[in-house]
Length: 304
Image 1: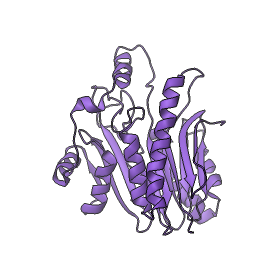
Image 2: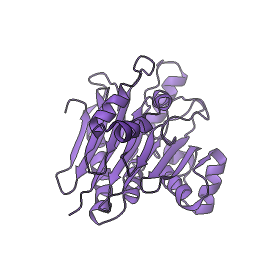
Image 3: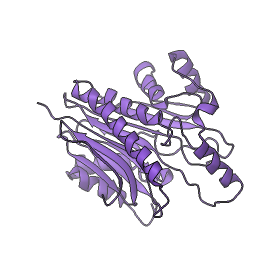
Image 4: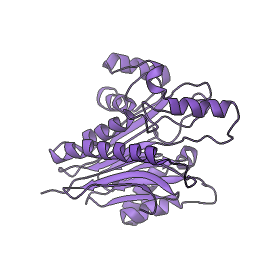
């Protein structure tokens, strides 16, 4: 039977011990498990890598415990603005959106851009108008704002904490039974970010890249740092041109120009042979993977 596999992440961050409570950790593990199963079933039934990564990321967007879709961070004005991208390793087709409001599943909008528009990237009101034309599900601002993000935003604007707490991303990479790769990445951005800020997640080559001749990679962590290093494409280049194994390529990308690119960095990736990589330089990366019919693996702490 052909190899197939899926890897997902729900964000990478440096956390103090005790900062992640047992109840929240249990919610995160369950959310990762559900999203992984959702994407894996698509692959197991012979579906495409593109459909699998979209399904997995939609599951995470629907879960308020992750910073994408419902549960997204609030910008400085207290609004949700979401970014997402998806890419097909078969033909390098891609769809991306940023600064999107009201769209329940930004990754679904990115997929609609890939499938139904002559463009790769739509932003803001233009992306929202496209979503309306595509008949995608919309929701009022209250759907996206959850108690946790509203509380963090209030603390931030009242200067009770100097540093934004939430800057996570969700993502998925997959290899299907037909030998094709795909990636999907989605985020609610950084708590308290400036209106219109764009991180790495929707940028092809920044936080997302997939090409059948090398690998698919999705990044998470400090978006500005990942963007400046074009780290998803860096992984691709290291595999394609230097011939590095996928896990080595991810580690090398994370340490690229480390003195200039300091910050939290996490990368998940997969190659055409079904080898998977889950690498980070911080103590927390919410992650999960499953190769073929092997047992699924779910982890949060770096050392587990």
